[in-house]
Length: 203
Image 1 (tube, rainbow, N blue to C red):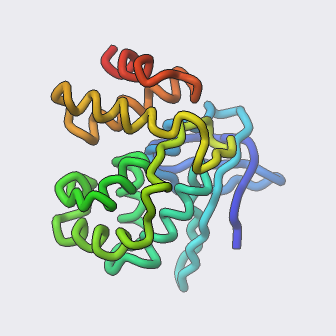
Image 2 (image 1 turned 90 degrees about the vertical axis):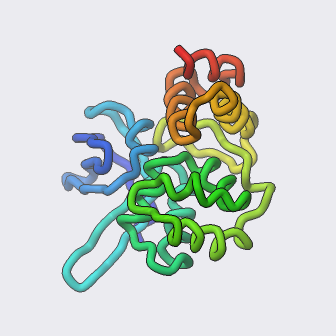
């Protein structure tokens, strides 16, 4: 099993990247949340990967952190009716902390806003994954550039959630608030305070 790939970024689109290593260019399917964190072409990066082999295809999926890759695997292996394409769509819409929080809270309405995820599929996500997630996992590690290791208990885990909730209280829709805070984290770095994230997201 290919668990990671390190190399030169050749190109990046919202849902795919080409990584060159050992003289070969690998097309890696990625969620938008990972694309946001990749460096520009010409720079080195590392992606945590999961390979899906079928009779007529071999597809490599990549993620900025091992936690995101493991959640992707959980989605496609444990949730009825969810394949790689749908799982990638879910991880493209919301950050991992927001997804886990929505599942544990049973927030079907928020999950159903992910492209391709209707109410019934959102209900299955909650029903089939809730017992496998624990409150201790729900802290949000600040997004780092792809390839930088993160600990599930890294300092400042709650900053993303606190900033997102503040924006929601100001009238933002949860997916929009989550995206704005993710972008603020990328711009300001993992050391940014909750207040700085909110200010940047509002600006």
